[in-house]
Length: 489
Image 1 (cartoon, helix red, strand yellow):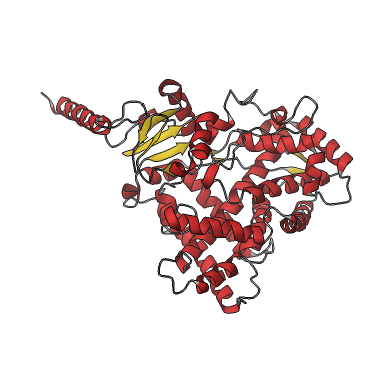
Image 2 (cartoon, rainbow, N blue to C red):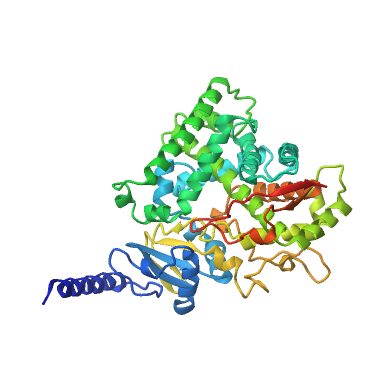
C-alpha cells in the first residue's frame, strides 16, 4: 500500500469516527456528512455562504446541522422556523456565540456578545438609557433633523459634481449615535473623527471578507499566521483608545444630578454599585459597550442609505414617484418628520424594501446554546452555534410575492396603503434583537426622505453602471462603493 492510499484510508477512518462521535447518543438535526477539521466548508460558497445554507436546507430541512471547521452549528431557515425559535422559544435562544473576532475586539465584555446576567443587566440598562435620551422619541427626531441639515450642506458643497457618498453618510449617521453616547456631534472636517469612521468601515469590510471568515473559523491558526488580521486589531485598539479618552473626560466632568449622555449614566450607575462585588457596571463593560454602540450605530445604517441611493439611481421611476409623493405631502420648505410617514406610504414601502432586499446581516449575529435544549423534536447540545438565517426570512417565497426582485409592492396593499409583513425582521427578533432598531428606522426614514426632498440622484456613468450585488456577502452584505451626482431640485 502506497503512502497516499494509506493517508486516504486514515482520513476516512478519522472521518467515520468523528461522525459517529457526533451522532451516537444524540438526536441532532439532520445535515450533510462532515469531514474532520474542516467539516462542511467544502460545500459552502465562499462568496455568499448563506446561499449555500439555503440550498442545503432544501435537502436537510429547515433545522439542520452543519460543521464549520470543527464547530458544530445548527442553521434555522424560513420565517416560521426562525420565529418559533427567536420569539416562541425565546429563552432557549438568548445565548450569543463567542464569535472569535468580536470576542477579541471587545475582550469578552460589553453588550454585544455577553450572556447570562451580564447581558441582562447591560441590555436593560442600555435600552432604558437610550430611550431616556430620546431614542425612538421626539427628542431624537429633532437631533436627526438637525443632522440632516448638515448632510444636505455636505452634499451641496459638491455643487452637482460626482462624489463618493460613503464617508459623508458615515459622518452623518455616526453623529447621531455620538450625541447619545458621547453627548456631542463632531465636525465633518474633524480629522480624528474622519479617521475613526474610515477605521470602522475597514473593520466591517475585513470581518465580511474571506480572511475575516477564516479568522472566525480558525482563530488559533490565524493568530499565528501573518496577515491583515493583526493590522485590523491594531486599528481596533485606536478606537478603544478614543473611547477610553472620552470616558476619562466624562469622569472628570460628570454631574450625578444631571447626566449628559450614555457614558455619564453608566458612570453614575457604576458609582452607585461600587460596593457590589457582582456588579456588571464596571470599566471594562463600559468601554466595550460604547465600542459596540459606536461601531454598530455607524456602519449598518449608513451602508443601507448608500444602498438605497444605488436602487433609486438604477430604478429612476421609483425615485420620481418618491419625489412626487414627498413634494405633495411635505413640499420644499419644511424638514420631514416621523409624523409624515403615514402620509408617505410609497416612500415608506421603498425604504422597507431597501432593507429587505439588501439583507444587510444575512446570518444575524449567531446565537449559542448555553445548555442542552430541545427544538422541534431535536436536541441542540450545549456549545452549539445557532444561525437564525435572516436571509431565508427576508427572501422566504411563502412570505413575499417576488422575493428575489426589488418590489415596493411587498409593503403596499391594493389601495396603495402601507402594510406590514411579519417576516420583515432585518434587525432580528426576540430577546436579542438589535437595541438600536427604533433609532435606525427613524434615521433611514428621515435622512432618505430629506435627501430626496432636496436632490435628484444619478450616476456619472449611467444607471447601468450601478451594481446592486454586494461587494462582500458574509458576516454582512456590504454594498459596493460608487460615485453619485446629487442635483438640487
